[in-house]
Image 1 (cartoon, one colour):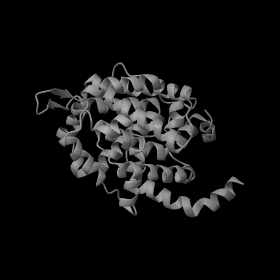
Image 2 (tube, rainbow, N blue to C red; image 1 turned 90 degrees about the horizontal axis):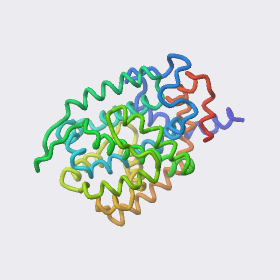
Image 3 (cartoon, helix red, strand yellow; image 1 turned 135 degrees about the horizontal axis):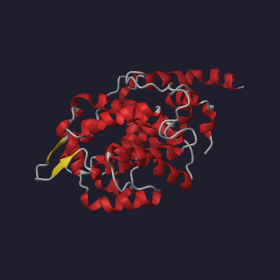
Image 4 (cartoon, rainbow, N blue to C red; image 1 turned 180 degrees about the vertical axis):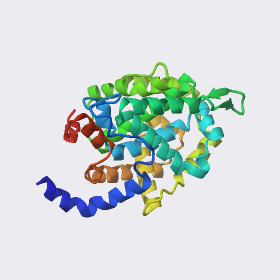
Length: 304
């Protein structure tokens, strides 16, 4: 029966598969997800992390939600604004971020440790001073915590909104597990529960602001064109679906209009409707390869 369903769904899933693989080509990072056999990596098949991060629609929309939130922290934004080529190669930056998340989630321990060390080396070279005289560095523990929390929040909410229900206890497990990546990069005091994340955002509000740099980065993001069919349509769908998950305080701070909020709600409904097709279209992704590496069926990830 599953084989029959797969064939019946193929006309819908094949375009989705082509879209994803053209936007995020596989095996360009050099990460080995297949060896060594039996190595569970940093999380393993019993983790909430393997389950939440396997849901690609939620991860894509959640990552974009995180980027929107990150534009509100002036020191975190400064590192990207002053040291990144995001204006010329935002697609490349998104691909590198996607590769880092996939590796730290699903690769064997040696691959994860090597990539984390590489990123730490890069972070150590990113430092400067803002226009109003504030020093910043990419390896600042507070900034690392901010970037991680926005991403973990986005990924979890993306899974919950577009892919599957996430009970509060599972959400707490996810935050508690996934902070290992942030702490390995140098983050400190990383919130480990859903309630702690909400409280963390509230504490950060006095630091956040929406300024000209925020607007410029969001403008570049809203104009991104992935090398896929109908790039504008797919971009707008995922950007709006990401915006649909913004906390209310972020909607207000980002000055999102009633029309933008309505568009976000409409996009959220569309993505929620088509997200099951992504799972069928991408049945051989990194989560599947990791499951094969440790000898468990990928179907086990369907259960909390």
